[in-house]
Image (tube, rainbow, N blue to C red):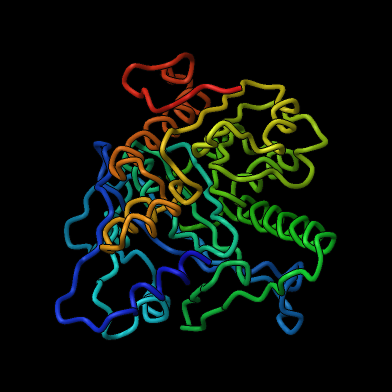
Length: 360
């Protein structure tokens, strides 16, 4: 999806000079480590490719590091995926993250947050929020939904590609999207089951688990919470709701954090709002668009494209400001509901964040 669009832009012009793309640095006091894990669910076949008899997933774990000395910074995507989306001759170099591969973890046990990306997008697309949370003392586990994501690279070099056929009618589309969400919920619950066996498990406080996601990952978060009481608080970043959350009550804290609706509201948000029976928050950021809640908010404006190509994708808001606002509110929400402290900016309009509107 958007990463495929980005790859077309990156490959558009042969490079005489190469521009290094970058992500904004985390704001927290902790250095950040990161590792990946290959998970195999032998209890079910892959739901999208019939020949694959087990469900394989890739996750990344981001965490506070004791030291990063002697460790290299991780690339934004894995090497095989980088070759697919940024071929030789591109005028751009993909960003390097602020996470250090295999760095030793900081002492203590930290709250855990899961991240689910948008439909057709990889787990790396939320890095600007993920590594910031890790720098403030959270362990964040990002999930690739194989064959839903555009590309997923496994440790042996295999790259799984998107394999969900487009629907032929509106009725088929609704059925398909419900299946997509159901698969994602199953993926996420399997990841939850594996947390105790993962690298860095000793750094995780599994009594304090939250989840957030962008677009399809947002409704995935809500539907996971309905299915699994281990997830105590959730955030939907600008995703329409699909599935059980539209018909069942959710009694745990939830934040709806959306793009500028220009006075229009997503009907599924209105419906889901009435189903939220715990602490609930609905906020929108002026000047943003749907993909403002991904790394593309930072990356797209760096491509040197005209405004009429950039603004429909990531809006008119200053990219650095958009990221800063998102980081502040997402962290405030999890601080309040996983650490039971802070979160005052959630309660009322804040003069520090005048672009954030309280709805409904």
